[in-house]
Image 1 (cartoon, helix red, strand yellow):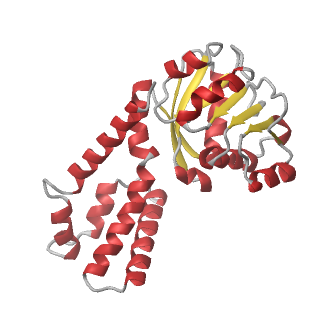
Image 2 (image 1 turned 30 degrees about the vertical axis):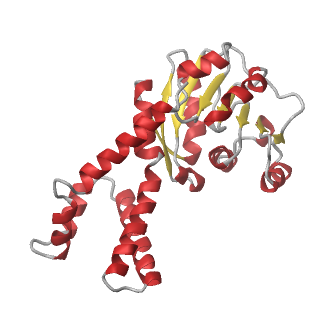
Image 3 (image 1 turned 60 degrees about the horizontal axis):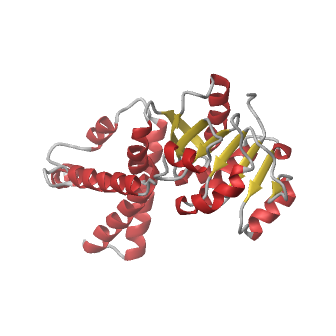
Length: 270
């Protein structure tokens, strides 16, 4: 496979749409892209007219690379149409939470080359991260094309076992929601100590945004060191961290949350 290959995107909702936009930003030739979406938005129709990719072709091409980005519960109903677009040489990249390689092969028996990938919502601004597992049937060139596609929305981490995908889902796939809730909780805590609600929210949002950017720009420094750099012995931050780092504090709470997300991802299988 070359870097850019014929690409079929099956489902252009939030994640499929983000990856479509990423591919276009990365100069993936629009003439090599087809998109199937049963309920295309006006914005998607307008983008197709502007960029030049084919939306809902009467007879989809047999693509070298297929991105499957529908809702997991739609897999059975989509399989008949999707089956006409794949062959044994197609590489299918699935971002369906909870749907295993075995699930996909059961619905699409012609497939031999599959990738399970779990991106997250910052993909919409090119700052996502995707954990991906590829079957051994992909060669290095094919994995390169997959990485090219996934990297259009952020960083890519290959994982060695499919069994880790549910854990990736629980940490980074669902993780942005945890951070957004942290903003909500921090703002509410600010209100509880007397700040006006709008000011508390602005302070909380800016704090999380800045801390995240510092993590990104100072990647060589561990989060633990960054935390210690903010914490003076006996100071205000230390007082707060005594609560957050207590045996019943944030770490065990986050562990329970991630385990619950992983269990739900596993329950979606089948």
